[in-house]
Amino acid sequence: MAPLGASPRLVLLFSGKRKSGKDFVTERLKSRLGGNICALLRLSGPLKEEYAREHGLDFQRLLDASTYKETYRRDMICWGEQKRQADPGFFCRKIVEGVSQPIWLVSDTRRTSDIQWFQEAYGAVIQTVRVVASEQSRQQRGWVFTPGVDDAESECGLDNFGNFDWVIENHGDEQCLEDQLEHLLGFIQAKL
Image (cartoon, rainbow, N blue to C red; front, top):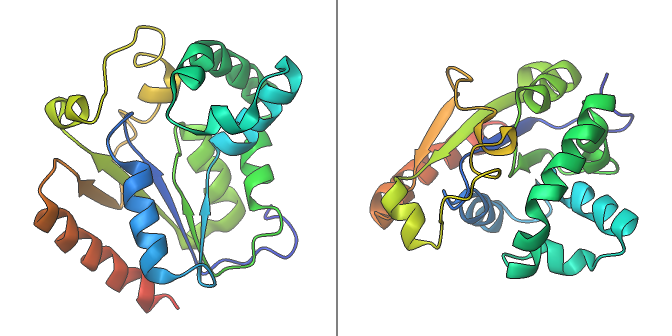
C-alpha cells in the first residue's frame, strides 16, 4: 500500500554496479527536470543515517565517496540486510515520506525486494532503469573489486533480475549517454 499523500506520476528505479554512474545519471536527469518536478531519492540515505545513529558515526561522512564510508561499508551492508530481513520495506517507506513531486528517481535500487515494494505500492507508474558500465570504465572512476562488497547482494541482487524497462550505457562516451538521456527525458516529460 502506498503511503498516504504520495501519488507520483512516474517512479524510476535506478540500479547498477558501484561506479557505474547511477548518481551521475540521476543527478543529470534531476537538474534538467528541476527540483519542483523531480525528487531524487536514495535508499542508502536512511540506511546510513540509522546506521550512523546506532553506531555513533558521522552520518555526513557516510554519504560521500570517502575512505571513511568504505571503512564501514561491509558492516553497514550486513546491518542493512538484517533490517531488511525483519522488514523488507523499511528503507523504501522512509524515502517516500512527504515527497510531493510528480517524478521520483530512486538512484540506488539494489534488491528485488526494493522493486517489489515499489511495484506493490505504486503499480503501473514504476519503470526500472539499469545503468551499466564496463569494468574498465568503472576502474577509471576509481572502482576496485572488494570481496564482501562487490559480491554481496547489495551489488549483485539485481544481476539476474530479467528485463529492465530501460538500460543506460555509461561507458564514458558522452554523446552516447546524452542520446540515451534525451530519449528517457522524452518519456518522463510525456508523463507530466
